[in-house]
Length: 69
Image (cartoon, rainbow, N blue to C red; front, side):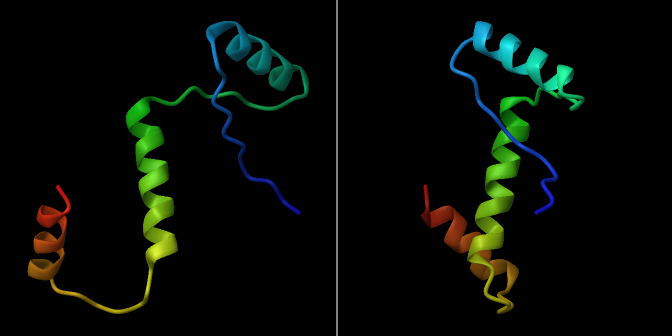
């Protein structure tokens, strides 16, 4: 199994530092991401899970998004 990335959300700053240091010592790269980047990842995952292969028009999509508020 090839693992491309692992996203860990530590509970506090001390845990973050510990996990980041351990990952670096194991030879892994560590990159902090913003809340917006995290939301983008989750949204992309949701889109992949909901993918049906069916085309819908822009008007239908916008109407659906507006009604979700």
